[in-house]
Amino acid sequence: MTALEQPVYRSSAPQIFRVFEHEELRIGNQQGQIVFTEAHLETLVRYNKYKNSKYYSLIHRGVRFRQYVGVLQTGNLLIEILPKAGKAELAEAEHWQLILLKMLRNCRLLRVEVQPARAIGVQLHTVLDWFAAYFLGELERLLDRGLLRAYRQKEANRRIWRGRLLINRQITENLSRKDRIYTVHDTYTFDHTLNRVLKAALHLLLRLPVAPVVQQWSQRLLLRMPMPQIRASQFTGADFERLPHQRKAHAYEPVIELARLLLTNYSPSPRAGEHQLLALLFDMNLLFEEYVFRQLKKALVGQTGELSRQIRRPFWHHRAIQPDIVWRQGDETVVLDTKWKVPSGGRPSMTDLKQLYIYGRYFSATRVILLYPKIGEQLDQAPWAFAPEAGEALSPLYCQICFLELLIEGQLNSNLGSTILQTLEANPE
Image (cartoon, rainbow, N blue to C red; front, top):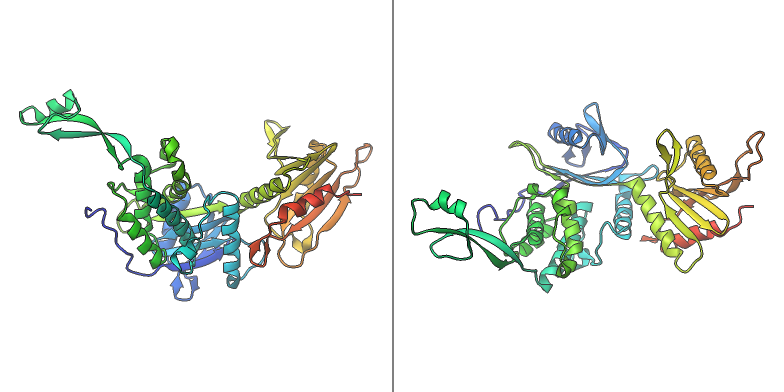
């Protein structure tokens, strides 16, 4: 193993700073002994320009987070951005962390079945720890089954002939060396792109502020990877699009997907002394919509209803409207719109109502339903008809408000889809 490949443990423990989506973080903000510094802010500012202010906006001496949740790592500071739909306290952080992790798994963004916390026998404290443990658990299962080999062309300047002569390289390298011959030949090796991706992700974990037991696990697996190292910064999203699709590589799919999340969201520091940054962030609005759709689709198995998602209809001047979910059964059409927030006073805003009214009319719906997460004691609101438009004999359009119970006794509500389906099949009148 070369000096470049030697894994090194981080010398100091990770500093974990927890916030919730849409909150602000300013220089000097402190949690325990951890302080958000100007150096941390400079890294976030640089990354913000690179991502066109996608994940957070800049404020005076700080940042304001948007609807994206997950982890931001800069230097030895790990900022964990947790979901919330209403007011939340840091004491509730583990509750919201559990919601995020379970929704990611159910939406197949974490396509794994293992329980890494049991496998390593410790408690994992951050979302990044969980991501790392999911990846390591899948990688260990792959290593136990055996890595794939593949044919790969290898160039070498040899004393003996092997393979095919490369004339241009022979002239360049060996014009005055009669004892050498520059050839290329096929070799059956572990050193191919799929395995290099996995080893690059392992090396990256050793640079991140994860739990010591996760780093130790990473180092043990790294010793079982018999191929040269490639830097994590050399992989981009386009590289993963070009990965070879082999019949025998089916077992690689879950672990490659987790490696992709780590490698493509890593931004190395452009200059020495500056912090690198890792961002594993998910849009909570889209995640909630995806989760609701999957649960409802699951409940519809064997039923007569038809479920569609993100149907586009022309609206005005090359612009379209696109509701989240449309359900049809016979002559009845219902439009569902998910909102990851808690409406003020338990009542929808005028903006939400106007949006749902337009959806209902354009899709000839009999009913529109707003779906919110249930935080506290909110009660569903029975269908209520929009006021009829003056001078027009339109069929009545009902609007209904539903609050969804995501967790029951610490577990995701397995009956969520059935609950929504019962609401859809109920007569609004």
